Image (cartoon, rainbow, N blue to C red; front, side, top):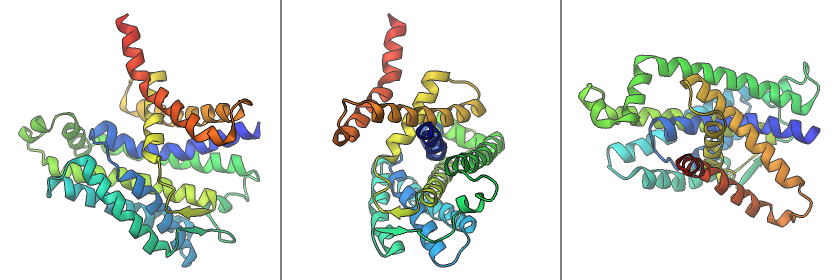
Length: 289
């Protein structure tokens, strides 16, 4: 039972990554590889800030700002340098490897004996996993409300229009370049937030922690859409969170299958992700008969 609760807790925390990717992938229609650099950047900035005596909560805000700066750099490459979005994201991601090393001055850094946001809540809930679920749920709730309110206002609608149809957005007087930069800043700020939260939960930051993050985030979005379908904007955000939890539970099932060697877990996980990412195509073919 504790493994199930742990998987749910991890799913809630990882859904923050998916919500960030929702902006770049679903709203802007950009495959932003910056994610794999901004995630460990958020973790690195958060952990080093705590080491320097900054409060765990303030350290998270520093991480968000760092992630937004990373998104702004990618946006600059796309809108000013006119570099294709995929390549622009890879360039920023590559540069962030060196930046993360400079921030931490080593490949990984522990939070052992340092206070985190999860320690602050232990006075109320004396259970590691329930404590994680409570804090994760609170962060997700605040994030979804803020995203919902933002995308209801004029700037948010302009950002949606930019992702839907750039030419039409330009005719409406929208500066699509500015909207692209803003969208990437918001997306990577949220991804860096996830890096900071998970670093505090795991108790360390590692420069290699961003490997495969974009795929995990996208799988959660797709699972939510496949199982629950496309609905209102608010419900799509909620479904994304459920998608992340379902994915973590599926990984738990794979882990518990006795005939699978522990050394093959990464390979089986990759095959599971490939299957999940193929579900929209499979579903479309089934509908056509």
